[in-house]
Image 1: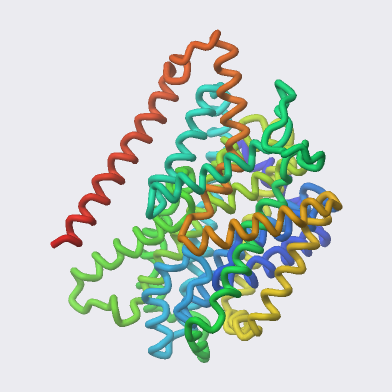
Image 2 (image 1 turned 120 degrees about the vertical axis):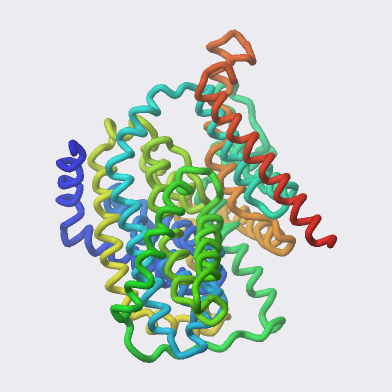
Length: 501
């Protein structure tokens, strides 16, 4: 319980008029971006990164906390009302949520989504508050070999294990690692991938990369598809935006089961909440098959409740892994790490000692942000859905303008604008050929950590490579990685065999 005084101090820092306004603004922006198909919390954070340079660290991170959960809240609205999930994390909720909307129960589906997201996020944040300091204490025993092992685990797990195609995932990882190497090597002073351009001596700013690949790449891809597919109609949401007692009793176990599934995935570099949301949906469907009156396929409310709780629980514990270990387990978490770094803070075991007031304010803002988001989404979800009526040309042009302003404001360099165009085309091609984006973000953020850890380990051991896998922690990490790869290979072989028959 020694964390409670620190948490209360964090609430004191957040509960000021200025910081509450930033939190509400972040929640509004996160939800608005999440509602729009193809966008998500990672793009919202990417667009906001350059806009927060003038804010204090606490104000900026509090706003990002609202965006962090707000994107997940908004993702499901378009999926339920249009059968077009705002992000891949909302796919599982769309299966039964859209069927509920078609049967005239859209308000109940939206309410189930909002409450499930609140419960999953709240329980996950409670777990984070009481376990992150312990994890940070354990992480103090980590040295360069251990951090290298964690980085390799994240690289392989997100690129090869989670991606549909291991080759595409590894190609995306290579793109991210290559971009992170641009600039002057801090140890040898050697130029790397700069082509002799002075503006690249300090490397490519993380804002330029994220805004270009996530925002501009998405705009170019969506603009190229206008007119190629019929837009789904928006189902009107009329009725009570709350659940009856019987509906609440039916969904409560599903919320808790979804939360239990989502909690551990937040600390596993699995690329996001797609896996736990689909697992929780599958569990509820299997339970439903054994009931007397199966509901799945007809608009089962539990098929919405469990994935929503799982997705937000994963997002909550992912924040814990980021703070305690400095390990981003998803693209959005990687961008949150970049947000810390732009203020000179490095998440990891020492952040509670060096920047404790900022960290506890951030954790407190997660609690308040979840309440704000529940208030914004429970009664007003149908109003958020009206954002789907914005003409696409206006929407795309607006995002492009904000992207250009954000990139130029980062360093006032026209070279960055040209880089944005080039990287935006890279992002477009990645979407066109189904190359995942999460490995790029993880590669950009973790490649410097991996390189520094490898060099330090070699220098400390007189270039003895055995030091990289000589400690119990590193051996355990590599064994878990090997098991994950083996499980993935077996699963894909079985899937291919079932298709052959």
